[in-house]
Length: 155
Image (cartoon, rainbow, N blue to C red; front, side, top):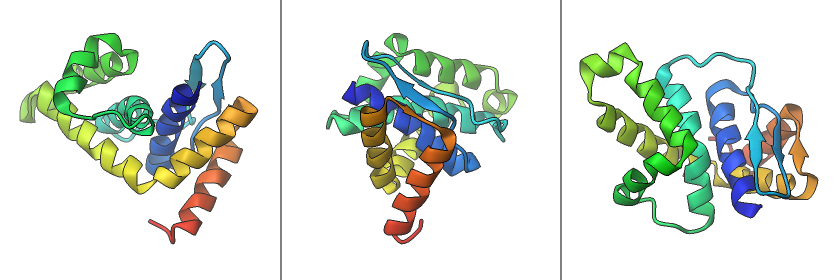
């Protein structure tokens, strides 16, 4: 359940960075988890891709796993969030015009890693709260992240 808590916290933190809201989070004893919508539309396809990728990135970072692109690319068919991210990228006309799908995927993956590292105290605090309570509301998640941001001296 620890990996799932970090996975869902990763999604929530990136939503918070992008929109100031997280959505409700929950994890179950069977290892499943959910991070609900935050009620705000994404400003760009890239934002949606970052949210998709953030869960797996936080999960891997919490376990100390290698975030190398070779491992990531091999994982794509096995991770639902990656498939969703690729689908968003494929349907974005800007991506088709300016860059290849793989390049956009890699740039967003790298961007998410940087954002999560900067907000890691918030990811940890949110994941730990989720492990205790099994559910965290949007308002509680925002409070946890604002508190961790204040302790870190702002971003």
